[in-house]
Structure formats: structure tokens, C-alpha cells
Image (cartoon, rainbow, N blue to C red):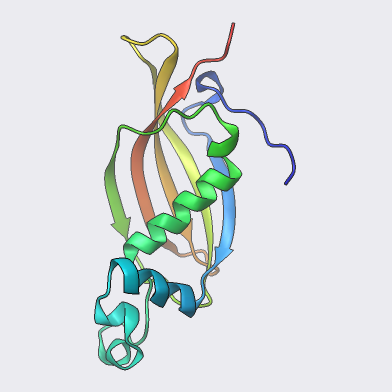
Length: 152
């Protein structure tokens, strides 16, 4: 893997968009994830899924979020001063994710604020977006992350 930029709190600017990767989803992983964590029929049973409003197997929304998180870690967070997250404010699953879909994920900086109680860090509000291969928005996540300040 190529060396990526080391991101500190000071590197984030409101409006900045960061592309964090792509991933093609397989039916096997959709069923495997859902079997373990969200075994609703339209995620795990082909016959039931075909008869559902979705017309076939779809990924759990939690699986979609997990794939987004993996791309963020692999292509961004691992090379940052991330200190974790105090939480997520909003998740939206806008379109079903199906086997064969290729998800492209980006994150946009919504707000930055230095911590008033801990001067070694700041909070960055972001919105993650996942789009399929047709450019359709399939999921969004709004949340916050804590990042270390640049060493002096």
C-alpha cells in the first residue's frame, strides 16, 4: 500500500471531500454478514427475498455501514491521528445494495472545532456517502471523530 498523508485535526477544512475507496459486494458476503448479524429473510433467503418488495437478496444496512467503515480505515483513518468517535448522529439507507454493486465512498467535512477541555485534540463532524456504480447515493452517515492536534 502506498504511503498516505498523515491527517491531523488542523488538516481538515469545512467543505473538503475525501475519497476513501471502492468495493464490490458479493452475494456470499451479503448472506454471510446477515446470517451472523441481521438474519431477515430478504438478506439471507433467496426465495423469500425474491418475493419481498426488494425482488432479491439485498445487503443489510449494517453491512453497508461496516463496508464503509472498512474503506475509511483502510484508506484514511489508519493514516490519521484519529482518537475514535464519540458517536454517530444519523444513518440513512437510501437504496438497496445488491450483489455485484461497486460502492464508492467519500467523506465530507461539515464542521471542525478544537476541544475546549483537551487541547491535544479537536472534533471533526463528517458526512460519509456511499454511491453505487451508477452514481446513485445508497447510504449516508453523519457523525463525529476526534483527531489529535499537529505536534508542535
